[in-house]
Image 1: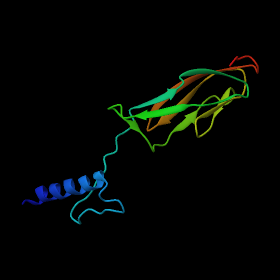
Image 2 (image 1 turned 45 degrees about the vertical axis):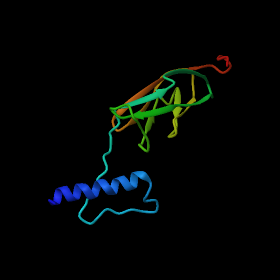
Image 3 (image 1 turned 45 degrees about the horizontal axis):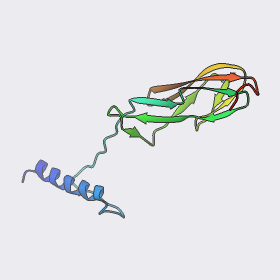
Image 4 (image 1 turned 180 degrees about the horizontal axis):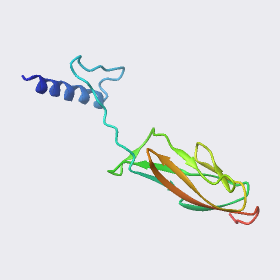
Length: 129
């Protein structure tokens, strides 16, 4: 059997065992096989809600979903947030805090792709929940 065909057969069997859960503790590929993972890049960043309002001092957690080009959800990727901190701040977990009356756009960025949410901040006691 040619080396490439043998390597392909070994790798296919190895990955089947790992995917099926048959290798629970740990698994290593044969010495002549390099196992390379395919990392799907972020294609879109979805921020929910895309538009909302808060009273000064209010807080609201954004939901961010990263998707690959095939619309599959991606996890474990770094997300950075930004906003106009004079109006609203956003922490590393995506929680928006209203600071002063005004409007701003909060952005969530991952692998160069950006999603947005429009935030309007009103005086305390203005919004009815």
